[in-house]
Image (cartoon, rainbow, N blue to C red; front, side, top):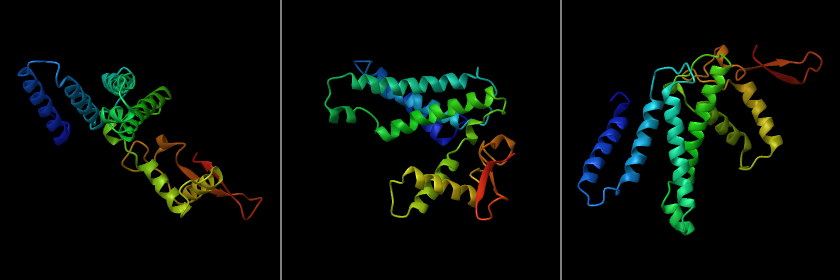
Length: 204
C-alpha cells in the first residue's frame, strides 16, 4: 500500500478480522468492527493522497461522502435504540471524535467544491492542514488572558491584532501565500484621514 504505515496496519487488520470472522459460528460478528476499520482506512488513504483533485467527479469525493454517511448512520442507529444514555455513549466514539471526523470531511468537501466551482485551482488532500485555524485559536487564547469565554467585541479586537501581527497562511498547505490564498492574506494600511487609526483590507 502507498498510504503509509498506518494504512498498512489498517489493511492488515481488516484482513485478519475477515479471516477470523470466517471461523465464527455467526458470520455477523465483527461486521461492525470491520466496517469501522475499512472506513477509517479510506479516510487516511484519501487525506494522505498527494494526487490533486481537479474535478468534482473525482471518485475520492464520493468515497468521503460514503465515509461520512457511515459515521452519521452509526450515530442515528444507536440513537434509535432503547439504550440508556450511558449505554449509547459506550456504543459510539466520543462526541468530540465524531464531531472532528464529520467536520473534517464536510469542510474538505466544501473547500473542494468552492475552489473548483470558482476556478481557483485544484486541491491536494495531502497538503490540507489545520495550521491556520489552530494558529488563530492559539492567539485568541493568548490575547484573552484568564478569560476563556470572550465576547464578540473581544474576539473581533483580537482578530484585528492577528491581522496586524502576522499572516494566517501556511507555506505547506493549500492556503500558502499566493493569489490562491485570497482573501485570507491581509495587509494593514493607515487611514490618511486619521493618524491614530488603522484600517484593514484584503490583499489585492
